[in-house]
Image (cartoon, rainbow, N blue to C red; front, side, top):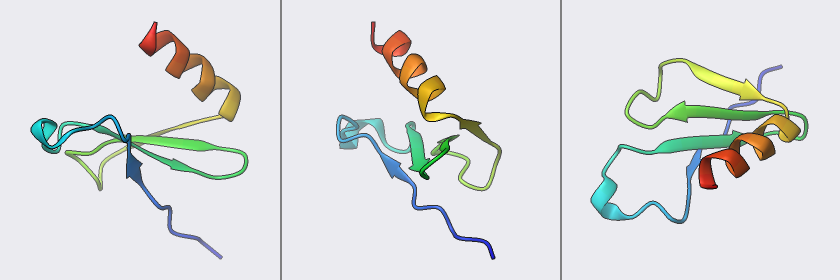
Length: 60
């Protein structure tokens, strides 16, 4: 049984960015990341720990 992911953009994404954002969908054991301009394209799947490290690195 496959469950559809619920994708969302950061609350920091304003309307002036248009569709040029990263979207994220979370599950208990995975974080999925994709380019909002290509919703049916590839996505990156990370562990929550890897996502946390990536988010800290990007924002530092």
